[in-house]
Amino acid sequence: MGCQDIVRTEPMRLQDLDAVRRIERQSFTTPWSYEAFVSELLENDNARYLVARDGADVVGYVGLWIILDEGHITNVAVRPDRRGRGVGRCLLAAITRVARAHGARRMTLEVRKSNVRAQKLYASLGYRAAGVRPQYYVDNNEDAIIMWRELTDDD
Image 1 (cartoon, helix red, strand yellow):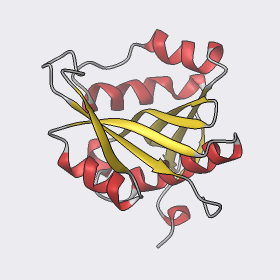
Image 2 (image 1 turned 180 degrees about the vertical axis):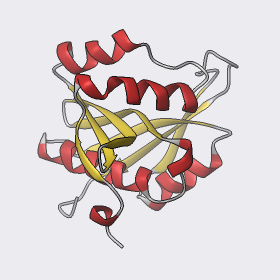
Image 3 (image 1 turned 45 degrees about the vertical axis):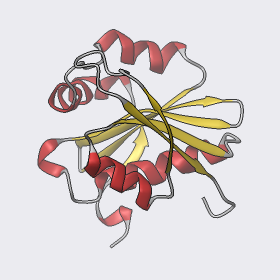
Image 4 (image 1 turned 90 degrees about the vertical axis):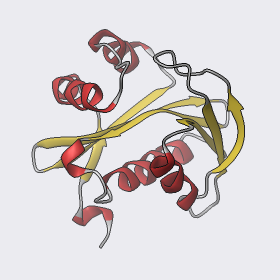
């Protein structure tokens, strides 16, 4: 089953932000504000954001900053009732295509040390642990694992 059978990915719009913020609050202990998302969408020329839709429903989202030839995943989240069904994998595949189209040759992200499920997903997509950001997460001072992936012509 391919991504087109699971969700449709498309650029995030301001109209999506209520649903995105609900997913954000369900997913993170320190969620981004509405204003932060508006700023990313309207003011950050380096930012690209996608949503995953099932019909009209937003079921996940992913953010990316393009910095020179690197893509930095800022956030990725899937609605709790849709986790484990391939939505996150589809979002990451779609944002990788966006990064590649904008000249990225590598991708990076940070993930909580305790989030083994996400680390396994990222590893299955070619990301490898490359370092640690000590006490990166402000809610509990948890370390972040820095993961990198080299992009290929197939991405």
